Length: 264
Image (cartoon, rainbow, N blue to C red):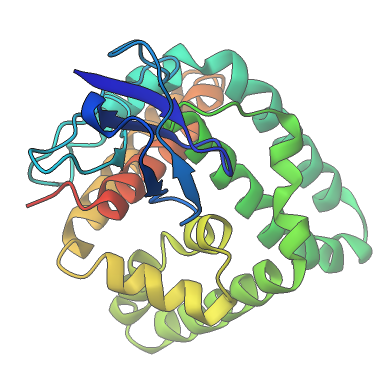
């Protein structure tokens, strides 16, 4: 039987076999030492949309990926669980997302200062939004305050935003394709920065490495999400209130599966 519990440091949902009660393990999310507590086997702590993970024969401990079984990771695979997670957590996602849109909208209307404000705010705000969606995928408690978590790493998030914007723009101006490749390869940058406390370039490099062998899958998923968002736009724009959070959740699902190594 399995014991479901949380990391005492970061709140990551974990699962271990019952025989490891009392043992100290390393949380795969934050690397902190956490003791496996006594508990009700198989009780489940994953929250809405989370499926129980299983420890391997060696009693390995790993985090859960909501509704995702180990297996091949292709371009369409994360969409179905992301759809279910977004629906079941829509009440959690919609408030922060609406605030995100309002902030960006207000900034865009500011004359002159809006351009500078947008330059400063977009990176940290996007980082906070992506991390909020990752917490939802992990079944952790998430709230509107998480939207501003990127400002705690303001310099790093701003640096990553500027680096990616400049390099991708240069790639687009060159032959277009290099810009697309860079854009795909750095998709997970903000998630890496927020989840691993990485620097700007370190986060970009880690994103690139994580997607090694999976860039086509990420490109395919991104293209499919563009079509889904076009459908959301066709619904008088109201559909975007669901499809844009879905897109970020799907990216978080992709990241989480790569992070835990449950792919082959």
